[in-house]
Image 1 (cartoon, rainbow, N blue to C red):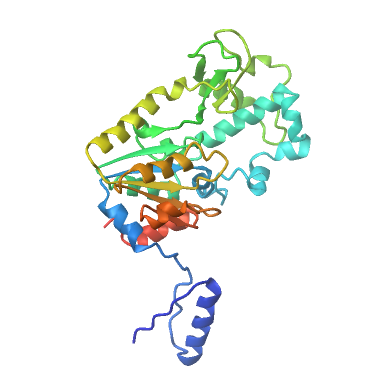
Image 2 (image 1 turned 135 degrees about the horizontal axis):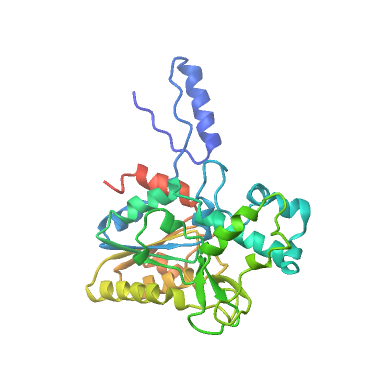
Length: 327
């Protein structure tokens, strides 16, 4: 006998399970995990597409759960902050970061080191499998954490318009080329870093980085003002533009998989994706996955060019794979 129930919430599942077990005491315990429904059109768009652009925001990394922490790289998580930077809570206040270079750079180095060693996670592995099931793909992400690089994505197929924690840059900036790798500075500082004190030793001013060109102040190469240098991303941007233009010229069907992109910087990922779907002549489809706001302009939905799913990145990828999209 096959019994099929349409369930909407976990409490629905519990209700039916208990009811069935009352009637059939020997009924095996069914799996309790409910996977969300992925619309058939989404699966068809992905299967029929010639190429994919993964368009990722902070919501993706928030679901990149690291096993030893049991948490993703979620910048809004107070629990993650407590685990990673206990010294900031115990020894100082966040506002002091801007008054003491020894505290400020201890935090920056710790944060850059943490993100650079985060490692592969299930959600990024699933996304890697999906992207590599296409003849061609590209990644556009507003995230500066470099998790795509750590998950075996081809660096030549990743564009990070908001910058990267992998670089420091001059704050002046004194030159378009005034940027340099942060890792050597992290390596020098790590022996002196302690998460419980969260400060560099005051007798080691040499650990505080400065611009090797002009000696001025530096900061991580992330967009935070008109001082931001886009030079490190110049080749990435050109490669991404070529990918899009060549796909358009060849009439390729393109699916834009947008994951975790909200309204912090909508002009970077969210709105341009909508414009691409609107101007794509039906060959560009947008799949918006967002746990908070998956809304879309009505014309894209009514025109069959976009679908919004109010789901987290991890649950979407799990449901997509369960639906056999890679088969």
